Length: 322
Image 1 (tube, helix red, strand yellow):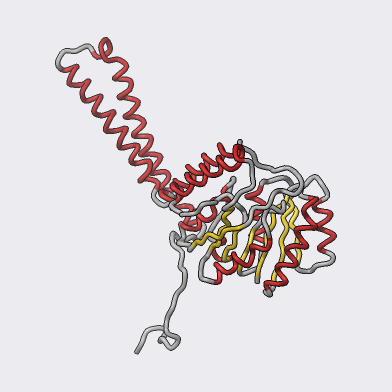
Image 2 (cartoon, rainbow, N blue to C red):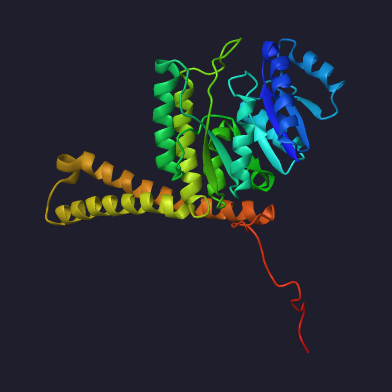
C-alpha cells in the first residue's frame, strides 16, 4: 500500500489540480493507496476544499494542525498518520510532478529504502534559491557522508519502517536521508522535474540558508558523536587542559626562577587559567552527555542498532536440544 503525504500551507489554488493529477497517476500505478494531506493551519480555503474532497474519496484523509508548526512538524504528522508500506512525500504547490512517482517506486522496488528526488534542472531564481541551495547541499553531503545532490526537496519515497527509527524536530525534514543513514538505510537518487510554481508565493527565501547552517552542525554531531559525546567534548577538553597546563607550568617555573608573573605575564596567566577551566568544563559536559545518551536509550527501550532482516532455516529446532 502507498501513502502519499502532502503538507500544505495556504495552497488553495493548487489543491484541486494536485488532487486530480495524483489520482490519475496513482490509478495508473495499480497499487492500493491513500492520500494524507496535512493542513498546517492555512488561512485560506485550503482546508475547506480538502474537507469537501474527503466526502467524495474514501482514500483521502486530512490532518489539520492547531497552529502553524512548520513543514517538518507537518511531515511528521503525516508520517504518523500514514498506514502504507511505502510513504511518498511531496509539496502541495505543484512544483513536484506526480508523474515522477513511478520512477521513485521503481527504486524502492529495486531494494532501496529511500528514493530521493533530485531537481537536476531547477527553475528557481539563481541568486535566492539555486546558489544557496547548491552550497547547502555540498555542505550537507560533506557533513553527513551521504552522496546526494539535492537534500532540500520534499519529493521522496520511503519504506515505512525506516521512518519509524527517525524522530523529526526543528527543520530536520531535509536531513531525513542523512538521519536514516545512521541506521544503514540504502539510498538512491532519482532525477525529477522541477515545475515552475503556478500560483501563490514561496514560503522560503535566502534567509533559510542561515538556519540550514545550524542544522548542518546538528546533523554532523548526531551522525558522528550521538552515541559517544565524550569523543567530541573530550577532545576539546584535552586540548584545553594541555594548553592551559603548559602555560601554567611555564609560569610556575618562571616564578620559581624569581620572575614577577603579574607584572610580566598577567594576561598569559589568565589565559592559562581559562583554558584549564574550559578543559575541565568540556570533560564534564562530555560525561553528562554520556549519561544523557544512556538515559535516552534505556528509558525508551531504544536500541543503538537497526536490524535489516533475520534469516534462518524454517525447520530450525527451537529451544534447547535433548
